[in-house]
Each structure stands twice: as C-alpha cells, then as structure tokens.
Amino acid sequence: MSHPLAITGSDQSGDPQAQRTARAFLVALHAAIRAVRLYPIENSAVQKAIVELGQAAERVELANGHCRLRRIGDYLFVNETRLRLMLDNYAAVAYVLGLLRDAGLGGLAVVSPTSPRAWVVLIGFLQSPPLGFPEEERREQLLARVEQAGVTCFEFYGPADESEQLETELDGKERARQTYVRSLDVTREVMTSARLGRNAGLKRVKRAVQGIVDAILTDPASLIGLTTLREFDDYTFVHSVNVSILSVALGRRLGLTKPQLLDLGLAALLHDIGKSRVPLELLNKRGALDDGERAVLQTHTWQGVLAIFAMQTGAARPWRAMTTAYEHHMRIDLTGYPTPYRSRRLSLYSKIIAVADGFDAATTIRAYQDVPWTPADVLRGMRDNPRLGLDAVVVKAFINLTGIYPVGTLVILDSFALAMVVAANPDPTILSRPLVRMVTDAQGNRVEDLRVYDLTSCDASGHFEHTIIRTEDPQRYGINIGDYFA
Image (tube, rainbow, N blue to C red; front, side, top):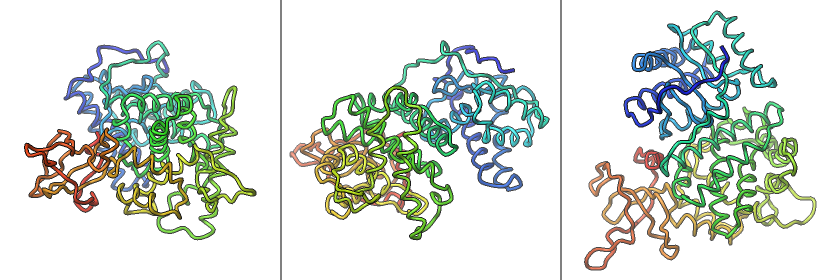
C-alpha cells in the first residue's frame, strides 16, 4: 500500500470543469484541516467543514470514477488534473504539499465510502506526523496509526520517483505563482524543523531562492505582485518569502550580481528563522506586548544566528545569512536591537533586508496590527522619518523600484474612478505615473476591466488621460488587493 504513484492518463489541467472540481476539493481539504487545528471536534465549524470536504470528494469521484490526491515534485494533482495556482488556492496548495511531505506521502486515494470520523482521523494524523524518522518509516507509521483507528477507506502512496518529476509549460503568472508557493512550502518546512529542534538542510532553500532570483531577473512584475497576497494564518512564512522577493528585486536595482542576489535572497528568506524559537502564543498574541514579552520577541535576532548555524549546510556556512539575521533590527545608528557591544557598520545586505522587512510588515495585517498602513504611506514614512533607522540611499533605491505608488496601492484618479497599482512605470523618471487596473468607474460602479492602463498616456490634445489625486484604504471599499494579482 505504499507503492509509488504512477502517472496515468493525460494532464487535464486545461479542462475548466476539472479545474473547478479539483480546486474545490483541495480548498475544502485545507478548510477542514484549519478547522480541526483551531477548534474542538464537536465545534459546528469543524462539523460543517468535514461535511463539505466529504461532499467535495464525492463530486471528484462522480466526475472521474475515483478520487486521488497526488504530490509530484512541487505540483499537486487531483486525479489527472494538475492544480493551477490561483488566488483562492495558493495557500491551500502550499500547506497540503507541506503536510504530505512531512508525512512521507506522495498521495492518497479514497477507495471506499468515507465517514466524517474517517476524515477527522486522517486529518488529525496528517497534522501530527511521526517526525524524526526516515520518509518511508514515517509513511508506514502513519498507515499503521490509521489502520489501528479502524479507518480503511484511504489508500496511501509513497513519493513519486525522480524520473516522474513533472516539467510543464507555464505562463508567466503561473510560473511566478509556482515559485511563490514553492518558496512558501520550503520556508514552512525550515521553520517547522527549527521549532521542533530538527536540523533542516539548506539544499531545498537554495533551490527556492534560485527560483526567486530567476523570476526577478526575467519577470519581476509578476512575482512582486504576489507579495500583495496576505495569508494571516501563515504570517511568518509569507512575510519571509515576501522579504526575500523584495530584497532580491531591490538588490538587482542596486546592481548586485546574480551570485550576490542568491546570497541576499537566502539571507532574506532566513532573516526571521529565530522566531521559530519564540513561543507561538507570544507570536500570535493580539494587542500590545509588555516589556517582558517584547524582550523575549527581540531574542529572535540572535536565536536566528544559532538556528542557521545548526542547519545542515554542506561545504560552507551561510555567514551572511547569520549576519543579517542578527543585524536586521539594529538600525543604522545602532539604536535598535540587539545592542552591539562595540561600534559596527551594518552590512549592505542587512540594510536592504531592513527596508524590505519594514515595508512588508507595515503593510500587512498581523496579530497586533489590525489595520495596516497603505504602501504609499509606508514609503513616505521610510523616506521622511529618520527615527526608523533605515539607510537613506537604500530607501531611495526602493522607492525607485516600487514607484511613489507601490504595487497594491489603491488610488483615486482625477475622474474619481478607483484604480489598483499593478506595476511601477518602467520609466524611472515618471515614478508618479504607475501602471494601473480600473476597479470602479467614475460613478463608483465596480468594473470587470482586465486591461492595464499606463498613466503616461495622453489624449489628442497632449494632456494626460488619467492622473492620481490621492491614495485610499482598500478595506474602506471592501476591496481585496489580491484579486488583482491572481
């Protein structure tokens, strides 16, 4: 029952109905996993999520004659349909990939009628895999635990062979989403390993960073746009990936070479790994921290050095990553934390990561920040408030990268239409005129307009067709920023 998966049939990823059915099953599985994790089994939210999961599995079986979830490389398949990464499933894909990998599974299949109890047992065991054992042994232990619980409606498979790893043709946006999800999955694995006291290797981390660097060098707009997606439950993981993407993009703007960008991306992805050694209840606490709690949280800088030092690194240790993990909250005048024992000059990588870290953190909803700042306001603060302790040259380069109105900024045009900034203008001399998508018309009616407008476009008389008059808070209008970057 632990034989490897075989790829049967053709990839039906282009079938819209198959995509909808497969996506609904995965999203239902993810929702049930989150419900079981958050609430007691008797809770109505758990019961509802489990029922919906069973119904979604039945729809997959009705459509294809069977229901099978497979992990092949960094892709998920539901039967023969490879799941395309979209806004409504990117977090689910990354999370389920991580669960299957931790359990040593390549997939599972429904082989007989299920019950709510069977799904609860499966999810419970998937969320608490027997870590610390080789992959095959983890899978066998999981299988034994499920059988011991009297659940026989599932069949489990081992990971696909290397020869079965899939190479598929992806468009630019899907390739960016694949890179993002792979990075998120790797970050979750590394953070979880560090929290459990296991030594994670750097091999997969470096592969993820390689993907980020390649994407920034070839199609930066698609990947930077994904940093506007916010998954609150996974803040630490999403934040680390976002900081890595923004740091690599900023490093490229500053003229770093590709090997330097790889080092920078790795350091940025691991800059908060020390938080894996901070109690979860402190990381997730709502409201302000008291002095003692703040002191514990601030230990994540030097704890990060220890966590990176303990990683399986092969030939050379990532000394720059250790340095930036330690320095990224110090501020250029050394008034931040930790307090240095003697005078020092922060590394360029630390200055870059501090800017990317501050920008992403300030624009994100967190446990103790219910209302994030708008991207434009954050940039203005970085530029005008020296007490933030950021390097002025690096901040200027970051504004040059993002434009005065960064990606994800909601703006009001002189026609009183709302628009979403989707990319900085490629001409660095016109930072105040980004590329936008229309959100509403002049009367405030929502529009379905996928076109991208260049605000440097002029009418027949030579005047600009559209001009930004101010920025707005998307939450005020019930606008989900991520809808414009899926």
